[in-house]
Image 1 (cartoon, one colour):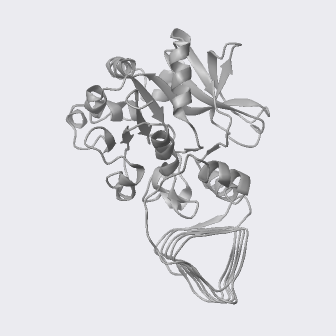
Image 2 (spheres, rainbow, N blue to C red):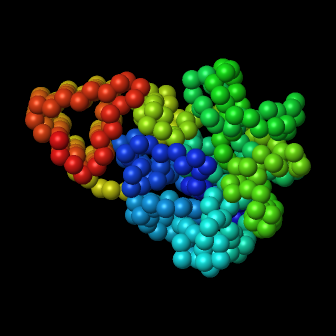
Image 3 (cartoon, rainbow, N blue to C red):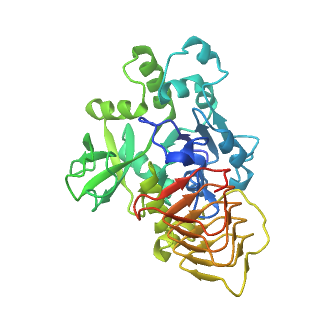
Amino acid sequence: MINECMAIINLTKKGDPSIDKLNYGRPIASTPIGGRYRIIDFALSNMVNSGITNVGIFAKEKYRSLTDHIDSGKDWDLSRKKGGLSIFSPENTESQNTYPYRKGDIYNILCNIDYIKKSEEEYILVSPSSMICNMDYSEVLKYHKKSNNYITMIYKNIKNAKLDFKGNLTLNLDDNNKVVNVGSNIGAFDIANIYMEMYIMKRTDFIDAIYNLTNTGDYLYLEDFIIESVKNEQVGAYEYDGYLKCIKSTKTYFEMSKDLLNMDIARELLYSDRKILTKEKNESPTIYTEDANVENSFIASGCIIEGTVKNSIIFRKVHIEKGANIENSIIMQNCIIGQNSELQNVIFDKNINLTQEKELKGDKNYPIVIEKNISI
């Protein structure tokens, strides 16, 4: 797949989903997850592990934390003279002054279309950051080239559509895996083909589509263009059969975090031959005192654990003091949990100081979320 396909990670999504207070100052893409990762690490790693060496991230706003995390891209082997990793937004571009009123991802891509035009790869992969999976895109490209599709959309057939992926687009397919039409999962049926918001097409066709869409002004979002293409072009579908979670709310973020404590899911996502790469931060080993009690939890490096941790994810440099009890919770970096405090079904953003003998309990499906940089 090397030199055949470039990729863009599209962070502008219709409806602007968010994870409550965790996204006040950051996009979903740079939200911490799994004790040491950011959500965008999954999309980036899938691309790099598939041999893609030219990746553009199209952001809209609040991307300072993203640029801090990504830096030059060296942790993903994307710090290169040719290709590599770039971050784009509509800000400070010629098109921003020409079309200041435009919204949507089509306008964002138009503002930075020169990047795609100057790239040399024949194909382009478009992906969001919010679909958590571990995928080999080289297999998708092989399928796309063999099928002669205008667009190949990626989907997963799920059996729990009444409970999960509500609001996501669904694909209705014929016997040859061609897309007949696109619907929406309203939770009425158990089985659905969930569109993963990923697709591959020829780079030149993509450029032509952006210009045509801008010229007609019919759509603001590529999502709508894809749906319309089904009526006029040969659009096929590639089935992905691994783990998948779409993070678009506090509930789905919490569910996905708990899934990572399932060893089968963790092995597939994090510990397969296709590793999930992230920004390296060298910390000292975590210290566990004789009073520490840890069950079915992920504890990152640099922590001090003096209390009890069950079914939880603890990020770097967290201090859990003696007598504190944490269950079914997520504690991000640089937090202090005071003596004899109790947390259940809680998400703490970074730099929170919880003083002694405090108690916070959320619902098992709808946790309490505490924003960063406060003392309780």
